[in-house]
Length: 392
Length: 134
Ligand SMILES: [Zn+2]
Image 1 (cartoon, rainbow over the protein chains, first blue to last red):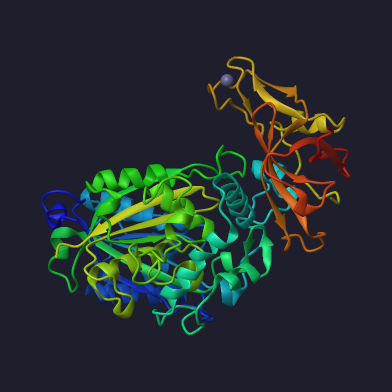
Image 2 (image 1 turned 30 degrees about the vertical axis):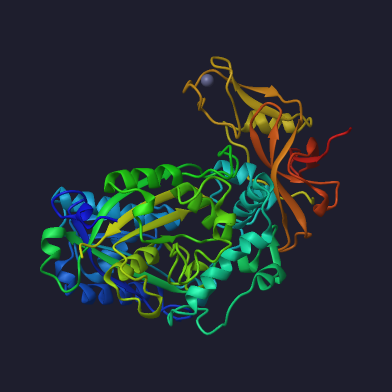
């Protein structure tokens, strides 16, 4: 990767990430806004900024008027807000919209945040939330699919069938995530010991071919990301992490709209993001993708162009995505073994930024200068990619 | 499957549900561009027309695009396991459904299936799919 590609005056959006943080994770007994407060105050502290500096706010998952609710809670009256609801991909979308708002001069400092107490509050429903007036309520809910799990399970079944792969091959994704989590003291499974392929296969089947070990965790948690202009970022506390590119796709709400279950909107979103950054996927040093389920990772790696269609599971069997492997992936342990508060996308950004700053201790990817974060929402419904880089 | 409670039809979908009362599976077809779609909508997603859609009776046969055996149901009193599937009708559209009348583990992607009906308490019926007669 060529350092000059991310020179400030050439490529990039002119906007940088200057602060990141997590809230408390795991089981917290905090209300949602309490966790939001932790993530926000810690991220601002990381940046060396104060709440009075914030004039833009992007969040969801609090209430029907999420950004408004958060502004009220924080006691600020922002010039710009966004509450685009796109599940776990919303936070990568917020980075794109924040970069545009900052470039356009509508806001100077934007706070992107999310938190959930879904484990403490036991608020996650196996069937998801389906509004009675939607087509899905009439044509899908009557059959009682798990939402989102049964859709990902059908994608996995189709993938294994079409490409001649097995559950054993798929399990490597969960095994590798655990290896990374063992290096991250904040991971829910830190200290849980290694996971084996046999463990994954022997875990209770929920919606075939996916077992509980193929599914992300259900935890409390949250995160926050602070963005400002690259110019202003130079005067702040931490190494600025430049936003180099972004892209997104929206494809479906129903389980029947997408013709090919193994081909996702991540193809287009990542192609757009890389083109905007002037990079190719082989230029990326560290990749953080939403691992809602093991199959999500296989589909996303292929969509990003890391390997060809149908090749992902073969590609990773050599330990390539484990710590020390050639393709550092989900280096915090991911939604599978680190933390999964529901809309995990914000925590992909937090980890990507920390890797680029070199703050990750035993799990640090040596010399990482470019990172890709890819969020996925709903049932492979929404996809958003962000490319980040540091000039060092 | 046991008859579930199903959200009421609306003005767009009532034609589809009315056909189920006589165990007739339909797909929405556009008279302008011949495009087919499911679920029913108030515009054609192929050409955008809003005044050219009608319900055509489907052959009632198709192929399993994918499926999953559900062991932990979101519905508290459901009998598990059961099979959720995407069936690609011979008309080309995909329906979410249940696969019935075979052992859950016996299903394969690509299996030929035919429609069957679960009668609902309100006179409508819910289409499910069973192995197609050979
Ligand atoms: Zn048409």
